[in-house]
Amino acid sequence: MSEATKVPAGSSTPDFSAAEDPFALFHAWMAEAEKSEVNDPNAMSVATVDQSGLPNVRTLLLKGVDDASSAERGFVFYTNFESAKGQELLATPKAALLFHWKSLERQVRIRGAVSLASHEEADAYYATRPVLSRIGAWASQQSRPLSSRDVFEAKIQHYEQKFADGVIPRPAYWSGFRVVPSEIEFWAARPFRLHDRIVFRRDAPHDSWHKTRLYP
Image (tube, rainbow, N blue to C red; front, side):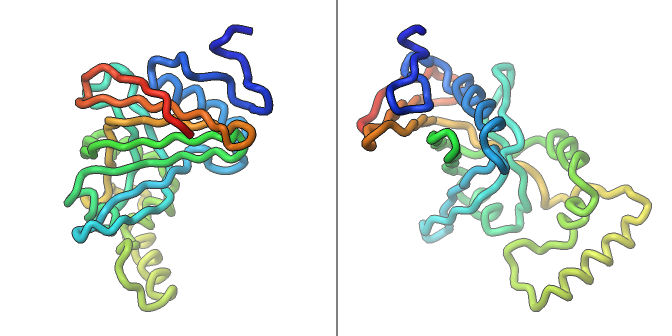
C-alpha cells in the first residue's frame, strides 16, 4: 500500500494529502458516500445571508457537479427564486455548502460565488422531477405565510386540474443556482480528534488551486 493511499490507524479514510484536484477528490468521496450513506448522500447545508448580514442555513440536495469542460465549473442545485434563499442569493450571490457523511466520518466545505444555471439546464432537470414535485413548484409560494394545510392542498388540486394533460412547464421563478468555488476544504476524522484538514483555494474560477494543510 502506497503512502498516498494507506489508511491511518483507527481511521476509515485513506491519506488524501497527495490529491491535486479538489473536484476529483470530491467525486471520489461522493462515490463512497453513495455506497455507505443510508439516505441522500447528496444532501448538503446551504448557507446564505440576508440583507442585514444575518446568516441563514438549510438542507438541500446537490443536483449536479460540472465537468472540466464547463466554462463555470461548480455545484448546482435548484429552488424557487421567490423563496428566502432565492431572494438572498439574488441579492448577495455568494454561498457556503457543507456535506457531512457521518458513515464515513468525513465532510466537505465549499465557499464561492453564485451564478444562475441556464434555462436549458433548468428545463432539463425540471423534466426529470416526479409529477407531484412539478405541481408543487407551482402550488408552493415558498417561504411565505400559509394560513392552513387545507389551503395548500387546494392549490395542489387546482394545478393538478390545470395541468391534467401532463404538460407541466417550469415556472419562470423556479430555476438553478451554481456555486463556483473559491475554496474547497476536505475534513476526515482521526482518533482523539487529531483530524485531517486539507483546503484548496484559488482567487478566480480559472486560476490554479493552492493546497494547504490546516490544523484540526
